[in-house]
Image (tube, rainbow, N blue to C red; front, top):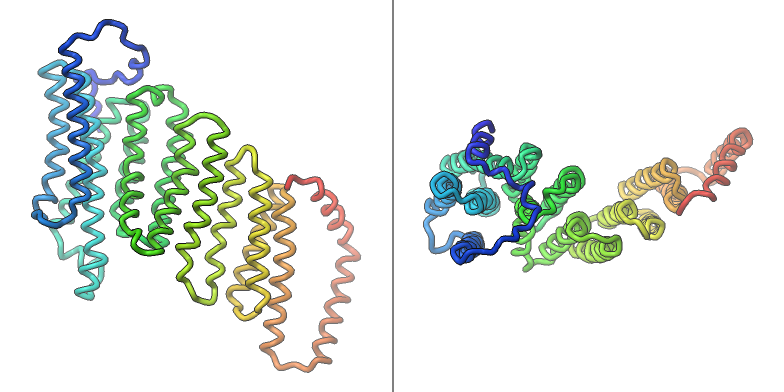
Amino acid sequence: MAISNHIGSKLNLHQLENDTQPQVEDIAPQTRVATLFRQVGIIAVVLSAVIYMLQGFDNVSLDFRQWTWPLLMIVMGIGGVVCRSFFDDVKSARIFFILSAALVSVQFSQLGGMLHEIFHKDILLLSQSWLSALSGNIILMTNIAISFALSMFLAYTCFSILVRKSSLVLTNAFMLLNILMLLPMRASFAAIAVVLVMVLIMAWLQSKIFNNNSAFKTREGIILRLLVLLPLIVSMARNSFHLDSITGVGVAGVALSFFIMYCLPAWFSGPLFKEVCLRFSALLAALSWFFVVVNISNSIALMYFLPLIGLSFELSRRSTKDKPRYRAIGSILFTGLAIFTCLPGEDLLAVTIILMASLTLLSVGVMLNFRAPIYAGVVCSVIALITLLTLSLSSVSINIWLALAVGGGILVLLSSIVEKYGRIGFQYFKRVKGFEY
């Protein structure tokens, strides 16, 4: 890290904060030509990266793909040093360093594709464990180690040049996002979890770093934010290659809904745009999640819709206009889910999950003083408890007269509890009427 800081200081490239003032002097012809060359060069490198990722492993040597891109990353970094040291060209130097960091995501996407091949092709063919498959490919492991060390150095150099104060945090977050691309998950629940983690990292950077520094509102600041966002964009694009299956469509849709909910509003100002993003992401997530779980046919299949209930409360937390509406929708959906799960009374595990979720929902409502979760939690808890009691009695051979006697005794005991503590409960119920929905 000290070497990266030394490079930035030695080359005098720490100029992001000073780029907010427009240049008013006339632009010389050679400057126009140089600008054109820079723009065309950037487009050429971007197209190269896109073609490289789309090309796959056909009609090309695997060794060539493994080692060419790390060499290009090194060449881009050296190009930045050459432009600043020999030609005194700050703009081209910073472009080179930005490109060298951008190529990091391309390299990790390539490595992730190779790991995906090992996990989902070689293991199935050879019936071997993932550990033995990896240990047998020493060249790939060496490439990953070299790529990580090189990427860490280039990324930190780029960030320390462009925005020195937050360089370490941005480097760590950027590398973590790229490492997540190595995970061999595509069209599955695990792929959704990976994308969600990446989106949450971006949301954290937006609230803690980007929103608190005016430098990120400049042109190069926006480019830097896009650079950090690149691993997430590549991951989402990579998941879209699996749209040939229903689950793949669902995973891609859920990933896009996460991006729209957490990341897209940060690029545009105005509460109205944020609310539109939340509503669209809610609809897209609900439809996409249906595609993800449509093929599940086990006894607790309905339980896979519980994340949609959590989504409604997350939407309520993020919204500034429709908070009660999202909570009410989530509570109604959960009540319907509880009824459809408990009325058949056939699966003990599913009913138990509903009871735990009902108590959780009730606790959230009590802690946050929201009426809708409290009402839904109480109703669903009662339904789940009655269903559990019915299942328990049906599994025990017992005479009806004994069941009535035990039930009557329980009711008498409950009457004593209500007599002593009921006033507290009714007083709290009156307070609940004043809570926000």
